[in-house]
Amino acid sequence: MKPCVYLVGAGPGDPDLISVKGLELVKEADVIVYDYLSNPYFLTLANNKCKLVNAGKRLGYKALSQEKINKKLISLAKGKYKKIVRLKGGDPFLFGRGGEEAEELKKNNILFEIVPGITSAIAVPAYAGIPITHRDITSTLAIVTGHEDPEKKSSSIDWESLAKMKSIVFLMGTKNLKKNLNKLIKNGMSKKTDIAAINWGTYSKQKTVLGNLENIFEKIKSNSIKSPSIIIIGEICKLRAKLNWFENKPLFGKNIIVTRARKNASILSKKIASLGGNPIEIPTIEIKPRPSSYIQKRISDLNTYEWLIFTSVNGVEIFFNEFIKKNSDIRSLGKLKIATIGSETARAVNKLNIKVDLIPEKYTAEGLISAFKKNKIKKNRIFIPRAAKARDKLVRSLKSMGNLVKEVKIYDTVLPKKEDKVEIQNKIYSEKIDFITFTSSSTVENFFKYVSPIQIKKKKEISYVCIGPITASTLRAYKIKPSLVCSKYTIDNLIKEIVKFNKK
Image 1 (cartoon, rainbow, N blue to C red):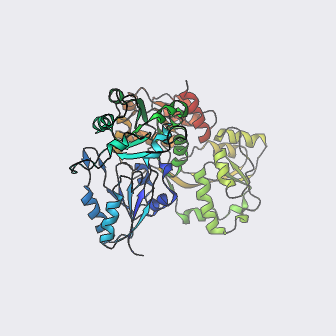
Image 2 (spheres, helix red, strand yellow):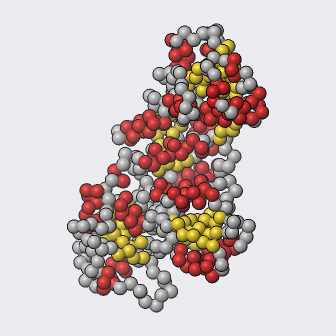
Image 3 (cartoon, rainbow, N blue to C red):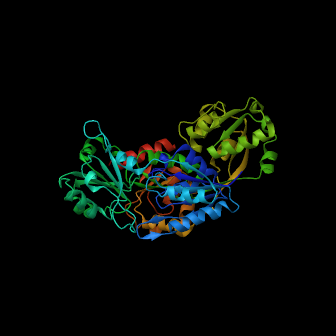
């Protein structure tokens, strides 16, 4: 395989708006050379061996000049790397200087591919409820850079023709806005023409202001609209009053910390983002399976048991990974009945086309104990593969009912090694945090290895959300009162209750 540089459009900000091909390349890349406007979330998807190069350019700051970026791409392609991803905000060829980079690569006989991205010129107005074309208003559109090359002796924009357009989008439009609007007015555009300025479009922190060419500067200043922003001009801006959808989502603008293990966090994060919230992932636990030889030895007599109990999704995944290694056929489970604590754990079992025989009404150890008592399950042989730090309540109670119980600790929940304590503290203390979610006692305990309970209590705006009473009890041990304890102990219900709580 020859080295290839992929100029990938990351889209406007919302990570769900990248193309399928772009996302696959991010995950497979040997190197990612990324821009300031490409969502940092994409970097968390890179494989462990991927080299990350910050080429971010924004107003007043350059990690690398364009000339250095070009040279960097060439040197990487001539080095040991095969798949180099140049990750650019929006689309590589729309004011993204992707054409210049492609020319340099061609000059140096380096293979390249272009992966288009959704441009902010279309996506950001759409997220603000402004269609940039409309049959009854305008069938033409001008997309203009708000920041021409400063080394040009004169503008290459035909301002006279532009002033006649019914729909105009300025990208990178705030710095030179006054100068650009004056040119439009000078060339005949009315001062009363509608205009919108959108800051951080498609992100949860999106902010939109409406005005006209005469008063927009005052509104931008009073609402702290800064870079990165885009400007939309034309009667189409009026449609926002009817079509604004994104900023009306139930968790819009809310910063919500997700403390689950990174492999599990994406489920909760996606649900938060789908409701307009901003999930901030601070993984406080890492799932570390015990050695395969250790587990294999302890499941060798599984066929002598009558019940198999799972207390978590992680337990299901790790157990069956080892079970299939040993047996190769799921039918080797024989007549084993399966019980799970919780519907999510049951779904993980069902994905393997295996029926779950018992799910308690309450998704706790106590709930399962009650279900076993109600069904008079006594003097049975019960096998429980689970986390090393799990409460012993379940095992003790089942034994007291006359059952023979074998508990196998198949994984540990440990503090992630890769997480930077200082970076985590900066995320929490420098941002306005609305909610912190805890989905287990381990997430609570490890969270406070990163931050001081005394310090975080000073941030009065934070609401603390616990998935259930056991997790809430652990939080109270740190002298922090839970703001919300979920009535049903599932991720779906946790989200529902946050939305309900947020409406108060």
